[in-house]
Image 1 (cartoon, rainbow, N blue to C red):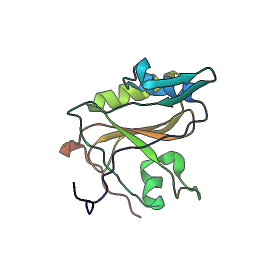
Image 2 (cartoon, helix red, strand yellow; image 1 turned 90 degrees about the vertical axis):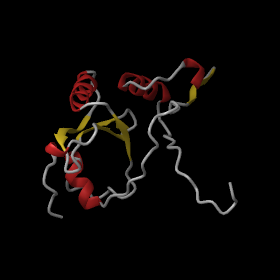
Image 3 (cartoon, helix red, strand yellow; image 1 turned 30 degrees about the vertical axis):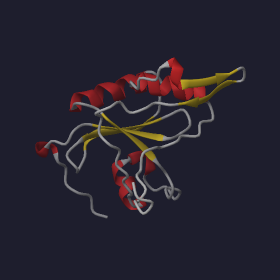
Image 4 (tube, rainbow, N blue to C red; image 1 turned 60 degrees about the vertical axis):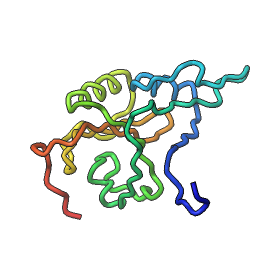
Length: 153
């Protein structure tokens, strides 16, 4: 690789106020986080690595306006502090899996931000909140017959 090559987005690091609670949330969500990927000391969990498995899709970096974010996350409507917010996105294999996972997580007491809906980009989409208040999106593959109209911004 040349020293002139552009940087490649490959990591999102979450700074957690309670790493044990975050570990429980992301494991319940379905991430395979083996014990060997957790750095514990006598004072607790300090680092967790959930690595992408070989053959999985690369990550996308999406940047949206605050006005648009208020449309796809109804919990954020009319908020003035959206600049700098982050949504950690997870792909799930089916539209039904979005609904089932959302139901399981909210039944377990995790906060709902956006109930499952057919998004304008043709995917089934929902948003939860992790223990630190980070928005966590769940998205199915796109399906042309499920497109909703774009919002007026």
